[in-house]
Length: 164
Length: 103
Image (cartoon, rainbow over all chains, first blue to last red; front, side, top):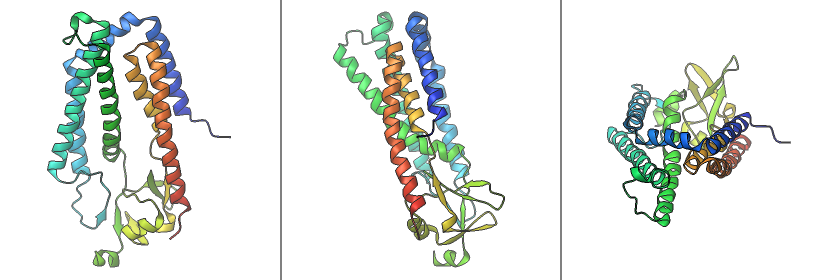
């Protein structure tokens, strides 16, 4: 018998409660979602988290001691960090705009900029949102883990050092 | 997947390197290495799963689904969980492959 994963059970219960609450109280829920999607604070937070993560990652993974070994996920030079922040900042902001527009199209037509979009256009937006989120999740997660999870660097034996 | 060793007092130390097998790890760092001041052999390195993508996928799926209402949360959560579970199964295979590997 497989062990019960309490984290998954907790998430399932949490999502179940959110699903029931949002189904029963959809009007206030949709207003909360729209307010969050429209807020500049959310955009600011996306960029702030990325910049902070980049800075912490850089200082944590550039040791002065040369005989330490560590694996990093593609972030090495300062230009890589700049590319990381700009790429995922732009993706995060784009996701926010696409989600806001799609959500407004169905729930708040008066707030929608592209109000003449068809159902097919909105479906395309949703696909783009899903693809961007799962792509970013796979790329950003390792960097977040390297930044915020404490890992020990390896020091080689002296003869291995000489060999390298 | 993350690699770890246990120190003298049994505390788990997560290593900042990865490799699919012990042989490939040895190729990368040698058969013996130090973490802090403590000496370890490659056979003392073990692998474990570093994340729970089933839960992560369900949360992301649920949040995307929230845009479609209560039913969307349920459908998105289930789909996201299934996608995450596929990744977890893959990682579980990688963990087993490392732990069963010999140098």
